[in-house]
Length: 628
Image 1 (cartoon, rainbow, N blue to C red):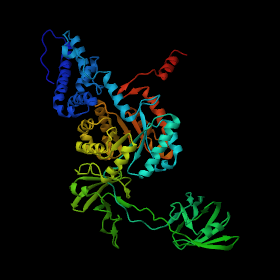
Image 2: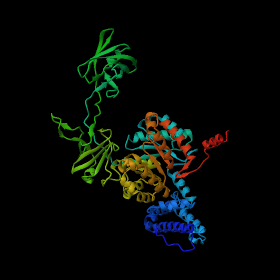
Image 3: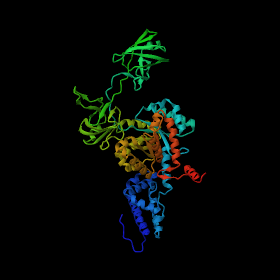
Image 4: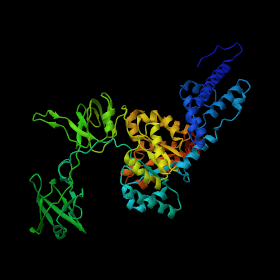
């Protein structure tokens, strides 16, 4: 900002006020100019979202400037710092300007007296209205909705779904990357039954799978079950290894059991033993501890490696009473060990991956190999670009590119030596991939979604044209009522968020999901907090609700105990309109915990505004000070 020379009669106070007024007025004029700049995009938005689109244009204009110095000066003058203007940009600017004119004893221009189309009251009201339209009404006691991802088992567990609805789940999320329509349909049916029983409304949202940018299969290891007792530092057995014995005609590939002949199983009694020679030619004995319908429980004090075809001898009172064999066992899931400096080749197709091959002297003859099925990866990447695997646990740089092969140098590995498995995500944050907006599977799934869902989430959206394609498919299905959610999970999508918002605002209702898993990998975890903040601000300016997603209270959902950092993260989620929980064995406890956190934090905070509710601890401090 240009500072003009003060006149003789101006006091330092007046000079500061005048400079602040010029700074705010410059922002207001730029915001007005942005209306013309975005005029074409604004005119194409839905009428119900047009004023919100104008407010977004105003916000973008202001945020093109570094207004930190101006904010500090306004604060020192006892005025608004503009730090909470998102929902009502022009109204905030005009309110500050009116006060500055009055303090300078200047007449307030007529254009500042007239109310902006978006006021301090209507801005938050529009956000609330748009939130209700796509995420449903807020539950009693809190404003933040809770979305929960369904496990496949929920299709056969109506009681789980009923308890989740009863506990406060507002949106049931089904991920089309898993399971199939018959399973999804049972989940929805159970939900509708729970709604009728409880008299509550719960919406349904489906995530389209999107392009599958993942590692391919890895050559399976040997079919073997390893039994290892737990020992102390002195090698003494603290707890034996335990394993189930099952009839191989009923559970031939159970991962936690040994399939045996049914006749042998029927002969077993508690106290019997089973003698065998394991894969290392070691004599071993299993003890039968319990007999149940269809299975027996056994334990062993020494390590053993059991493979298909192992001969088993059932003994009782030192006599052999029956014999049998171990049936088919699942192959051990394999991985590729990688450390800094290793070379990994990524090949096109479904070729099973494998570890590096070495000669007799331990030198690499052929580097490790993993496949990727997406054609676009091999057409879109360039040498020198970064590549990340498994949520960023393994980092690399592409050193060579051919038609069907990438040569990757590993530059970082979590823990020094990481394990790369099949079906792990691949991120290419700086590559320009011409990925399809919708895959053939997405289009097929969308037909099911249109009949059963309230909203559909679009995965890996990157361009405004991707949204156009989704809307065309929705139009073909005559499903204009379907809300759309934009999953922002790539660096490119984040940088284009304003354009994505304006395009999506042609089809209300609309929401944005901050998919922090892939997004954190793409932008770098050190930037994730900054990026998610910016997304919250932009969406509030557009009056578009936000879903706070990925790994919220994950330790609690999966292990029964949250970390301290996760609790703070969950509280931060209250600044969004919805928080998403992922599936886990402790999901009911997690839902109750999150509800408690949100209800408490919402008494103190709304978006960026501290509500200054009475603090009980402050009262106690006053009592102590007075000697009470």
